[in-house]
Amino acid sequence: MIACLGRIVQDTDADSIPDDDVSTLSESLDLQGTIESGGITGVAGKDFGGLYSVKPLALIKPSGTEDIARVVNAASRTSHLTVAARGNGHSINGQAMADGGFVIDMRSTEENHFKPLTIDGSHYIDVSGGALWEDVLKRCVSMFRLAPRSWTDYLSLTVGGTLSNAGVSGQAFRFGPQTSNVTELEVVTGKGEITVCSETQNSELFFGALGGLGQLGIITRARVKLQRAPDMVRWIRVVYTEFEEFTRDAEFLVTQEEGESFDYVEGFVFSNSDDPINGWPSVPLDPDHEFNPAYIPQTAGSVLYCLEVALHYRNSDRPSTVDTAVSRLLERLGSIQRLKFQLNVSYVEFLLRVKQGEEHAKANGNWDSPHPWLNIFISKSSIVDFDRTVFRKMLKDGIGGPMLIYPLLRSKWDSRTSVVLPEGEIFYIVALLRFVPKGPTVEKLVAQNHEIIKWCNKEGLDFKLYLPHYQSKEDWKRHFGNQWTRFVERKTSFDPMAILAPGQKIFKRTHIIKP
Ligand code: FAD
Image (tube, rainbow, N blue to C red; front, side, top):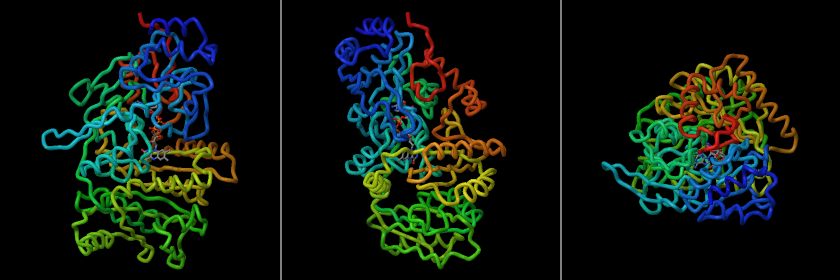
């Protein structure tokens, strides 16, 4: 059957396969799952960014790993077909697309794995690469009172999708990104081989696939470290006028031992104005909280900074114990005393906090509009310059969405993975999460992102794009820097024909046909 598909696609242009040829394709692949082609590939040619769209040859809904291996093997027998795993399609720049190729809907495998394990007294969960983190959270907490340690802010993302990038949120300062919190993967390589890998077994594939932008293999299962889930979270926001004080406190908190700091540390920049999206109203955690601008010192500039922290606790903890722990930590901070917002929420509610924003954005039409987002890792040595020019000048009126900024520690990231970071122990993630508006066009905002990157390069800032997006090999080489050779070697070993994740635009499909 696979040989038959090889014949079809070698002899025919992908584009010329007729719309009604689903059954031929389907028969050729001999899948347990389903295949859709022609005009019914639906979301497969779109993503959250809304900036790119392409036409895939077919959307595959595999029933499991064997189906995925079959699709990759079939593509490898052609001269040109590519395969993109699509997690939840929450990329910005077409990274999960395959122009004229196969798109694999990983969500159709989300139920395939969900198995708790205890190894040497530590808890783990085996989950599908296509599972959504929000489902992993809900099931782990409700069934075992356990939870993964490291998260993303928004959880309608797949396990394989975030592990192919890094997976960063306010817990990463303590536990590292999500890529530092898995111990085993099952991967379908670009050679169509199903391989289990870990630090000690097929370690090149294990570390290469983590942060590997989908280039080396499709993650079909991951073993995720768990910890005991807290019941509740005290969620707090405090405000600063001075960037130096904000960064000093944020860095202080992320460098303290567990028990001596908060369990979650993030931050954001907002404009010093009453703008409902970009200004003071974006800070309070609850509609009942009021942001009183009279407390802002006269010396404040065009933008202000919010440090967002959270402390875990249990239902059995006395309220006074939690209050004391919080006060002890807040006392050490130099924020504006009277601009402090606090809320007690359940742990699950806290981790699902962005879902509320999603519902709101869906209701006002902003969720489905384009999102020209920009994510950058910037070294501590460059962050003051970045603030001075980018936040305080270029973006001083806001961007129509959050401008996140918080510090991370390089030592919590494993340098054997494919993730690329700036130099130095402390670096910041800056996320410009634009929800496009009325007003400037999308092109203008994309151009502004380019202008920011261009400025960072011109000024010699030490930075790397997170969720990178480049068009030319030269740019990718520069991005990977001294890790480029290792990345190319891994690619050559595990996906020698460059079949996988063509939407990243790093390697071109080669024409070697498997014997
Ligand atoms: P997709 O966009 O579908 O895929 C991304 C890439 O990974 C593609 O190249 C694809 O081919 C590849 N891929 C997908 N699945 C697999 C797999 N199983 N095996 C191998 N390769 C695969 N990121 C953070 O780190 N922290 C955040 O807090 C955060 N918040 C976000 C909030 C929102 C609202 C959005 C839209 C994105 C956010 N992201 C965040 C970014 C997110 O991590 C990436 O966009 C991620 O790629 C999306 O996951 P996905 O499952 O939709 O993957």
